[in-house]
Length: 381
Ligand code: PMP
Ligand code: GLN
Image (cartoon, rainbow, N blue to C red):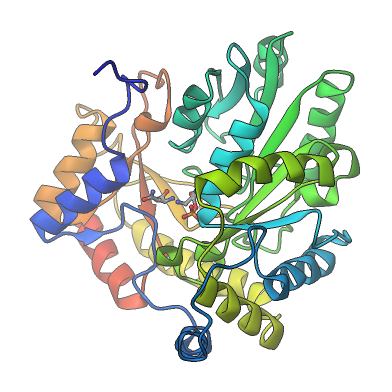
């Protein structure tokens, strides 16, 4: 068979989680909590399953859940979105991104991605017949390199993929940068996918600058989020995408033939829980910041160097002082096998990784005891 995705292998998340399991290592690689979502949320699933909510949900998502999403957006970002024409529930943010790409990208179109970028973007673009143009973020802070971004925009540019808070770096895009982006693409027929799955995981009192709060950018954007991150239930693979009515209508044309709809009892449970505990999202920054700081305070005593993540549940760490001879893939394997802590190398999220990149990513969405134990092992490296 002639592969349509010749450069794609098994994802780094699967590879590293498998290696962690084989090595008996603490798994800080693939991003998922080692604790459960709220009990009331989990109990609600059982209730809805027993109440017979087990057939197809509406293609666009349960009205009760879309209503809660619209209410949360109004509360968090001051935008009134129409739950019927602008909110679509999807089986995971991944499906939302895939469908948005299918809706927009034609053969020959170019899509700008900012490296290091999440690994589902490029295959989604390639399956639509498009081509990714990779613009590296500027080191050491993973900020947008405006000159390189401006140089990458051309007549074939159809779409720019944004991700803030950013996986794997934890960096944030500011409101001023959104303004700068709006100025850059003004007058071009260019759309945006704003991957904001970590929208509620932002620390040190900073507010997430959402594209939903940006009038001009929202007019041409798909804004994607994931209940998996926000409610500690990544295995539920339930997310949503918000976009103006015409863009939502195009996305739904793809979504109805990729999966048709998300899982019914999970949507009911999320709707109940969001209605009962709207403050959940407001409590997340403190909840995760405590985990970040627990992990970082201990890591600061080790030979790893780092700047604390501004957002997401990932912490990058530089290991130049430990094994400068190893590239990051070899370092991740060595840490997993020899020191019992699995992590993610970040060169895999680049088309062309910087030659001297010596960074690995640790996930701190873990119980205190897991973080303590992992940090103790890293201290000894
Ligand atoms: N985008 C980014 C940046 C992510 O980190 C993730 C989490 N794996 C996703 C999208 C996909 O989210 P979901 O699991 O809801 O498909
Ligand atoms: N987004 C998660 C991460 O960055 C992994 C998701 C997956 O395994 N596909 O670790």
